[in-house]
Amino acid sequence: RQRLVETRVRFKRLSAEDRTSLGVLRFSIETRIAIDRLFGSAPFGAFDDWARAHHGIITFEASGLSRASWYRALHDGDLQQLHPWVARLIGTPDTPEQRIIAGVHAIGEPALASHRSAARLWGVPRPDDDPVDVILLGERRDLQLSGVVIHRPTDRERLVPQRQYGISCTNILRTLLDLGAVDADGVHAAVGH
Image 1 (cartoon, rainbow, N blue to C red):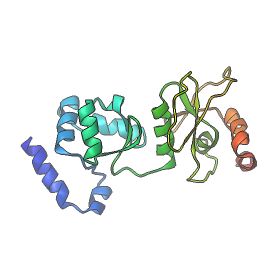
Image 2: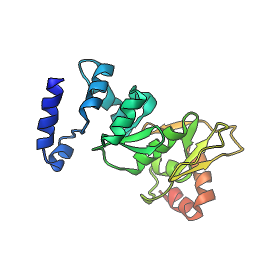
Image 3: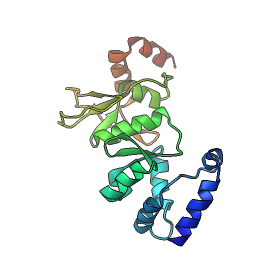
């Protein structure tokens, strides 16, 4: 615990720019202790590895934190909640890919990035302010997420998940068809790309 306090004091002495350039994430002492208990002697290794593989997004389930520790991390500003039980680690860049994976994780399995979001993942130039499009394969009807358009297609036969940048999404053909439903002009640019 003393080592954590000393690290916290040293961290506070760094400027915000230094913390970001060093890739150091700010965590409260309580959050550090909770993570240390979960991951042993390398307290942030597994936690950071998981978040790094998921574009800086962490889910409550993947974090292994208790509800109290999760809420404390949100309250202390260590995590920024994007959707219920899905948060962004402070210090990670806010990117469209991060918002896409957050939307997919917030809906849970089985969900896929689709339409405009899948087009971006397949390398089609898209505006950064596009909403996140997600196909929900399950039967849940109660979902409403800020900034996420949830699609519930009836034709699910050939809807096989692909992975781009570690994110589940529709295949390129399905993506182009779905893109035409929400942005017909975008299909022309996508095919030319």
